[in-house]
Image (cartoon, rainbow, N blue to C red; front, side):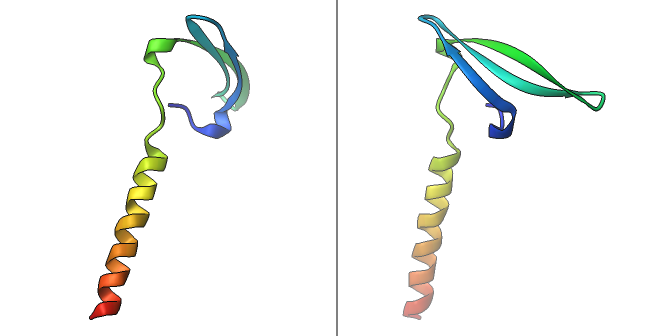
Length: 67
């Protein structure tokens, strides 16, 4: 998926989503639209992996305190 700082706007229809983004081209920032079908959109897994890392780190801290 796109980084959050590049996403600007959403336009949702029944079958597709249009995302307005900023694209840097030769020192200029141009507004650009990307059309995506609903089937191709998926949730980001970055939060899930971050929470998994936090859980693992907390377990390691608890094990280190017990020793």
